[in-house]
Structure formats: structure tokens, C-alpha cells
Amino acid sequence: GTLARWGVLRTAALAIGGQLPLVLLLATGPWLLANGVTPGALVGALAYVTQALLPALHNLVHGLGASGSRLAIVLRRLIWDAPGNSAPCEDVTPERRTSPAPALRLSALTFAYGPHAEPVLKDLELTVARGEHLAVVGPSGIGKSTMAGIVAGLLEPDAGDVRVDGHAVRGPGAVGRRVLIPQEAYVFTGTLRDNLRYLREDPVPDPELLAAAEAIGLTPLVERLGGPDADLVPAELSAGERQLIALTRAYLSYAPLVILDEATCHLDPVAESRAERAFAARPGGTLVVIAHRISSARRADRVLVMDGAHALCGRHDELMERSPLYRDLNGAGEWGAAPDEEAAVSHPPLSLRDPYRVDPVPRPGLPGDRGHVVAHRSVGQMEAVGDLGDRRAPGGE
Image 1 (cartoon, helix red, strand yellow):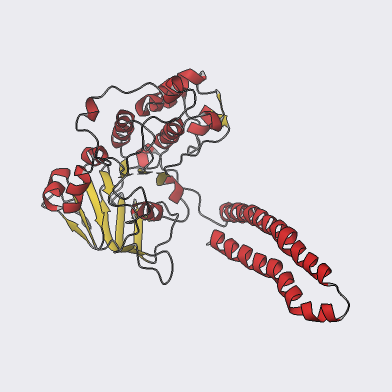
Image 2 (cartoon, helix red, strand yellow):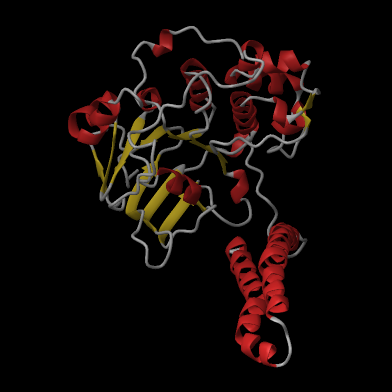
């Protein structure tokens, strides 16, 4: 909302302030020539407007627009969080992770990127039980990251309802109930401890912090840097190291729902497996993984296959029998990993073996990842595959 309004304002300011002088010069050109202005002076004025004024105005508007966007967001948060204007932020401690409501429920979810665009998601129904590990797979452009953004509250659906732990995904207390880790991990300048405890209001004891680092696989980096209080320079970290820091930060948070949107794509398969298993074992925690390797789907309790108008949800072996798309994804050499990858020996940290910090493991992609595949059908009504036995069928308890 705020960013979109600022974008419209920037475009309008640039169009009016930048194009109006040019239009006026062209419109009044004959009159100026008739009143003594030489052709050379008119051409010079046109060159000045197009070559100097327009680029300078463009840079000014975009610079002010970016600063204005950040200022508007900060002011809105300050006003929202002011005493008397909002309810206190809910502290979702480990003791309060237990709730009778499902961890995640999507009801008739519909979303399109514009009023006249074809919906990416249409009437999607999904229920994820507390403590469940769900993997989401499908072709590029089908709406996997869109669904993750809606669950995280970054996108607002056109229709339908989204509930995390029985609550709306926006409003007071929402940030304490879910955490999204995107593909590009955010690490800021400061100490490693500051980065890891960023999602916690209370101090994190060293034993808890080090235990989380060990569970995710961050310990080698902690030791190389010299401990949790070492200073970080984000530019000196590899993409894989930044992802490990972001994963450990999410692991230390109290959020009961963790969404990994290709958040392990720069890790080798063994490191990825270790991180996902650590999140799946969090007490009271629920994990949703936007998968980029078939091994992620095999590790999950259930797999959501997004395929156009219908979405299938079930266990790996059930989907292998019932879903042609899932069989294709399993058979795709690019996307599927070797069956014995779990037995492979994990490599040492990237920074210890590659001074240039170039990830040696190419990111496997879904078929069509080399281009931009646009979904030709929206993801709609989901179908359960077989009898799941534990009554965790999509759309039900």
C-alpha cells in the first residue's frame, strides 16, 4: 500500500516535472522562432532539457522517493506502536506455542498481481497442523513464493482468509507468530550476536545461542570469526554463510511458524538437510518449505504440489502414484538430487575453501528456471491424496 502509493507519486512527479518543460518548448517553438529566438538557441534549450534536466530530476525524484518510503513506514510504525494506539505486542514464548487452532489455515485464498491480471492463486484451501513439516513444490511462476508472501503478511489477498495460529497475519502480535526467510538472506553490519538475536526482545544466553548455531550448522563460522561477539562485514560473507546466519536467527525466534522460501538454495544438500531437520524438530514449531530440491519434499510430512487449477497435497509416496507433475519433478535431473545425497560428506564452510566465496554448488532449479515461466492457470481448489490417517487433510483438521 504505502510503497505502491509512493511509486505512483514518483511516476507522476517525474512525468509532470520532467516532460512538461520539453512539451512547452516544442509547443512554443514556432512562436519563439518568430519572436527572435535563433534555431541554435532553441536546439540548445531542447538539448539541455533532455540531457541535463531530465536525468537530474530523475535521480532527485527516485532518491526522495526511496527516502520518503522508508520515512513513511517508520512513521506509521511509530504511530501504530505508540501507547494507546495499539494493543501490546504479543510475546509468543515457547510455553505459549501450544494452541488449539491449526498452525496455518488458508480459506478460499485468491490473489492476482493487478485488477485485470489472471489470478495466480484461486480459491486455495489449506490447513497445516501444529508441528507439521510441509514442502511446497511446483513449476516456476505457479505462485509458491506468492503464497509465502501472503502467509507472511507481505502481500494482501484479493479474497479469502489467512490465519496463523488462529490469528490474522497482520496487526498487533502478528510478527511474533511467523517468520519468513527469503532466498536473499539479510545480514547487517554489527556483531554476530546482534544479527542472531534480532528477532528476540529478551537477551539470548550464550548456551542457547551456541546450541542453535550447532543445530543449524553455523558453528564453524562462529569459531572462525572468534565467537558471537565478533564484528560482521556482510560483504565478506558468502551467500551460504548469510543464509546460515538468517536461519539461525529464525531458529532462535519464538515464532511458531517458520517459512523458508528457498532459504537454503546456496547451501550444499547435506547442510540444507541439517537445517531443515533442525527446524522440523523445534518444540511446538511448524515448518513450511518452498522447495528447490526434491530431497526437501522427501523429508516433509506432507507435500503441496501446485499445478494450475488444482493443487494436490499428500505424502511423497502417494503423490508419486497420483501426480504426473510430481513424478516429472522427481525425474528431472536438474531439480532432483541424487538418492544417496543424505549419505554424502558435508563440505567445510565455503569461506575456508574458497577465498573468493563463490558457491561451488549450483542452485538446482525447477524445469523452466532458466527462463521466466508464467503460470497459465491459477492454483485453485486443492485435493487430498488418499487417506492421510491423521486427519490432517487439506482444509480440515
